[in-house]
Length: 377
Ligand SMILES: *Cc1c(COP(=O)(O)O)cnc(C)c1O
Image (cartoon, rainbow, N blue to C red; front, side, top):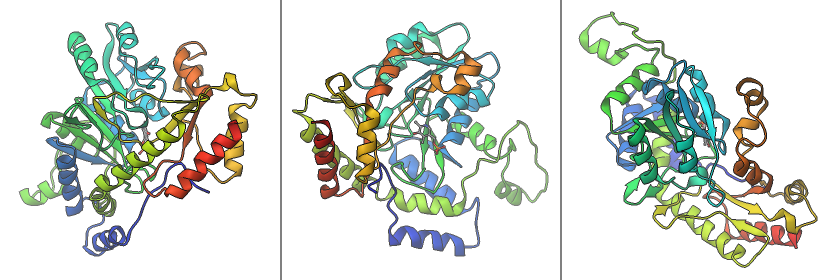
């Protein structure tokens, strides 16, 4: 099976984990600080705080900006459920907004219509790896005095105009799940230029305790205070060692993803039944996904037929995403229903994600293209 996404683990990655295992530390040790510092440099921000998953990163971001009961947070429906779930973990209410049909990024005009006196923040999702329109988003949050959080689980290494993803919102969440750009097995990060928000997240990931064990050791005391209700959201030393080793290869892997995207773009440029998503000229796309929209009205086959035939050929296509407001949990508890976000709903019917990862070979890409064209022609 050619998967839609997968990790690359090389001998230096393995050695890095072995070194961490034999160093005497297993959890919060020197690899955590080293990885956080290298990551902050890579995305050009002041602070990076590691967490046990991208979901924990989003949850921590909601905590840091003070989302609580009665607060609304605007979330695009075309995303993974974790983006909206993070709002609910803090007692807030996600308010779903539709996306632009060409890029599948948050429709900033519609987002403005969703703002009420209860709105606390907007979460922008860089769908597929393309940064949203952060100029528009920043002027909107400024006008209404809201927080801007980026779910950049798809867009590590991307940039908007001259700014890297990480420094475009108040807080930016990343994931190190194996299908993402770099992996820690499981893991996440929040990047920010606000030291106060970073400090809140460091406390939140450590049970809401203000000092960590290093600080207590230095102060020669057992005393600590739990000041807030936090969680154990720490990333281990072994995981940070792996992710740090992976981070060194990010530029190389991004180049490969972009090369593959150009090859798909060329292959589908003249195909009237495959609608490629649009890329804005002022962004550097990170291509977590290569998703296309099938012009289904021009086929007798359904998307399920096409999906199944590709899977039968050993091509691990996928669909990103079922609009979050249509999941049973959101229908039952938040009144989500068909028609709430018509663009996302229509896109969902037509979307298919083709294999996109740095280990994909030219021959595999050619086989994917040939198979898809054969099925739809
Ligand atoms: C992967 C992902 C997450 C969650 O990250 P985990 O590390 O799996 O918890 C959240 N949002 C989006 C858009 C993602 O793709």
